[in-house]
Structures are given as C-alpha cells and as structure tokens.
Amino acid sequence: MSDPRVMVTGGAGFIGSHLVDRLLELGYIVDVIDDLSSGSLLNLTNARQNYLGRIFIHQLDIRSPALLELARRRRPSTIFHLAARTDVTASISNPSDDLSVNVAGSIRVLEAALAGEATKVIYATSAAIYGNPTFDLLPIDEGNQLKPISPYGASKRAVIDYLEIFRSIYDLEYTALVFANVYGPRQGFHGEAGVVATFTERLLAGRPCQVFGDGTSTRDYVYVSDVVDAMIRSMDSAGGLLVNVGTAVETQINVLFELVARATGSTLGPRVMPLRVGEIQRSALSIERAKAQLGWKPMIDIRDGISILVDWYNSRPVEFVNRRLRSR
Ligand SMILES: NC(=O)c1ccc[n+]([C@@H]2O[C@H](COP(=O)([O-])OP(=O)(O)OC[C@H]3O[C@@H](n4cnc5c(N)ncnc54)[C@H](O)[C@@H]3O)[C@@H](O)[C@H]2O)c1
Image 1 (cartoon, rainbow, N blue to C red):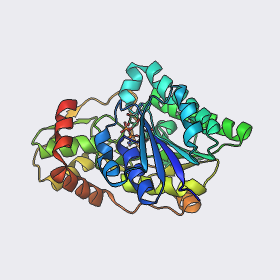
Image 2 (spheres, protein in one colour):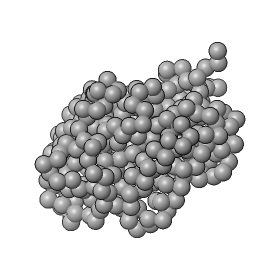
Image 3 (cartoon, rainbow, N blue to C red):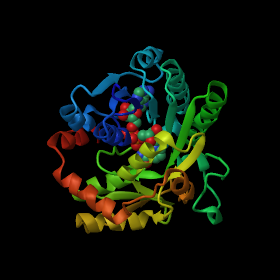
C-alpha cells in the first residue's frame, strides 16, 4: 500500500509549518499549498532537508481554480486548511480582501477536497467567532452564540456554515478547530497571538513594547505543539464538530508582559496605548469537548512555553533574524 498523503494549506506559515513537520515525522507524504504572502519557505527548511521526496511545495493562491486540478492529481485523504488572512486590524481596514481569501478561498479548498476525493477537511478557525462573550460565560464552550465583532471573525464563522453544507450535500467530513491564541517558534508579528512573538523579540533586543488598553484584557494562550497534536487527533475523530483548542486559562496582557520580561531578563516597562477597534476584551476557551472527543489536553503551560520560545529566539538561525529585520 502506498504511503498516506495529506494536503496542508498555509503549510509555510507559523502553525502550518509545525503541522507539516509532525505529519512528515508520522510518515505522511505532504503537499503544501501556500502563496507565501505571510508564510516563508524558511519555516520549512528542516522539512525540506530531512524529508526529500516526501514534501511537495506548491506556491499557489487557494483561490486559484488550479487548486482543483492539483487535488485531482495528488489525491490527499485529508486536507488541513490553515491558509488565511490572520490579521484582525487588517480585516477592518480591508474587509473585502479578508472575505476573498478567508471565505471564497475556503470554498475553493472544499471544492478541491471534492475534486481530489478527500474524505476529511480539518479547518483552523478562531476564538474570534465568539466575539465578546459576557464574562460569566468564560471559559466559552462550543454551544455559545457565534457573534464575531470583526470582519476576520465573521469570515472565520462563515466557513463553518459551508463546512456543514458540504457535509450534508456531499458527505465531506470536517472538524473545525477553534484555536485560542497560539504562540511558539516561527510566529509572525501580525497574527492573532503575535503579541507573544512581539514581546519576546523586542525585549530580547532591548526595545520597548506597547500594551493596548489598561493591561487587564485577557487571552487564552496555547502552545503550538499542543495545537498540532489536536489537529492530528482530529484526523479520525470529532466529525461534524466545532472543537475548541485552548487551555481554558485567561492570562492578562500585563501578566503576559511580566512573564516574557522575566524570561528574557528585561527590566523595561510596557508603553500603554488605547485599546484597538475589533479587539475582544476577555477570552478563554473551554476544552471539555476536546478532552472528550479527541482525548486531548494541552501539555505545555504558559511559563514553559515562553521559556522554550526564548531559547528558540536565542538560538534561531541567522536567516530568521534577517527576515525579521526586513519585516519590521
Ligand atoms: N496564530 C493564532 O493564534 C491563530 C489563532 C486562531 C486561528 N488561527 C488560524 O490558524 C491558521 C494559521 O495561522 P498562522 O498563525 O499560522 O498564520 P500565518 O500567517 O503564519 O499562516 C497563514 C499561511 O497562509 C498563507 N496564505 C495566506 N493567504 C493565502 C492564499 N490566498 N493562498 C495560499 N496561501 C495563503 C500564508 O502565506 C501563510 O503561510 C489561520 O487560518 C488562522 O486564522 C491562528
């Protein structure tokens, strides 16, 4: 029997590249679809060096009709769909671009899944779909109302409807994983939990950091290897379900700042800025469904995660440093 084949959209991005690494370790042949708009081939350096002939990188926009022909040829059994515009602020200034990539692009991915006779799509959605829940509902479970407050959140919510529709009309199975704020090595500054990367990089460089609002807004920070673990477990579980992937723990932004400052040995204080439009005040995700359906729970707490991240920053290859300097 030939080796199992999967496709990862957004596979050159932060989370996608960690998923690709894990899939290759597990023996899969992996097709990466990425237009490299926010991702980078640098993120796949190890994968390309160590798994020659098992990883295929296609620089392609997910909106392109060529994706259907590609899926027909490559015939992945599962498609992990992570390609997206991930910047909430950019979604407010350019909602039609967000809609085009995140919704129309996702529909193209579902069409490709049908064309290639994939049996499952695992979709990366976001806590932004829940909007600003009343605080007594925290940590939010999957039964909560979906009331996004940004175009990004709306686009991430819309795709869930399409997944359900494709499941009922075409029998295409899906799991939609609701990521909390994911952090870890290779993260860009602009995505949802980019604040962890930003604090770490700036404090290590002796540069000040901005904190938006009074520092009491909260997020649920989940380490990237835990997220990858949940995605792998979803390959044969949790069909037709929305499943939160977080820690259920709220961390205030000023506490996060302190943790990163301590781990980097910095004595700089934060610069306080007004809260940005479209930002959620407090967030934490209940993980009871992930425990029950995926047998999953997070293994890395925020202190350990930050410590691993700081070590990575201190030993990262020089190409990453140069790329960061260019993206500032
Ligand atoms: N990082 C988080 O905290 C977080 C939280 C919730 C949900 N998510 C979701 O997880 C997924 C991955 O996020 P990430 O943080 O790794 O972001 P990322 O920007 O690092 O990765 C996204 C990847 O998609 C690619 N891409 C963007 N538009 C594309 C297009 N039109 N065609 C092909 N490729 C395209 C980018 O080049 C990039 O490699 C996204 O769907 C995001 O919405 C992330």
